[in-house]
Length: 264
Image 1 (spheres, rainbow, N blue to C red):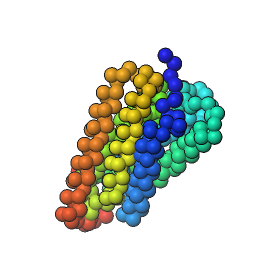
Image 2: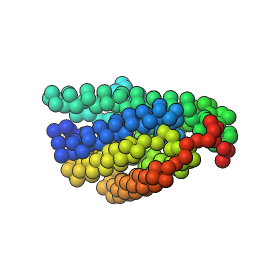
Image 3: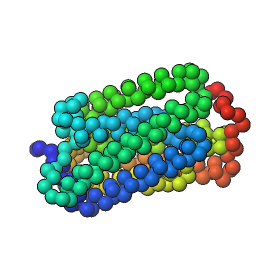
C-alpha cells in the first residue's frame, strides 16, 4: 500500500491541535533553558542531547526543503499537494518552525561550546573539548542519516523520539552533576513545559495512529509497541527529573565554590 501524508493534514484538527501545542511548548522550553543558561553561564541541556538535537533538526530541514534525492532523504518528508490555502499556510508554517527550531538549537550548541569546558569533570573531554564536540556532531549526523533512510523513518518521528527519551534520561544525570554547582543552567519552569510538550506530542501521535489504520507511514502495526514504550519511559524520566529537581531546590543546592569543577 502506498504511503500517504494525510495523517498530518491540518484539516484533521483532532490530531493537529495536540501536535501544535506540543511544538509551542517545546519552543517555550528551549527559550526558558536558553534564558537560564545565559544567566548562569552554563549549558542547560545534556551534552549528547544538544549534539543529537542540532543534527536531527538539520536533517529535518534538509529532508523537507532540499531538492529531491539530497542525501537520500527524498520521501522522508512527504507533503500533500498544497491545493488549499490551509495546506499552503501549514506547509509554510512548518518550514518556518523547523528553521526557527534549528536557530534555537544553534544557540544551545553555542552555549555548550562556550561554557561546557569549565563544567566538564572528565579531564580528557575538557582538554579536547571543541574537537570532541565537533566529532560527536559529525558522527551523530551520519548516524541519524543512516537510521532514517534505512528504516524509512517518515518525518524522522521515531528517530526524534529516541532522542527525546535519551534527553529526558540525560536530564537526571545533568541534575545530579549540577547539584553541587547551584543547579546552574537548570530551569524549573522548563522542566514542566518539557513534560507537558512530550505528553501532547505522545497523545497527538497516538491519535494519528488510530485516526488512519493502515495509512500511517510507520512500519507494521506491532512496531507501535516500541513507540508506546518510549512514550512511557520518557514520561517516567520527566516525572523523576521534576521530583529530584524539586528536592534539590527545596534542599537549597549550594552555589559553586570555585570556577572549575573537581575531576570525576
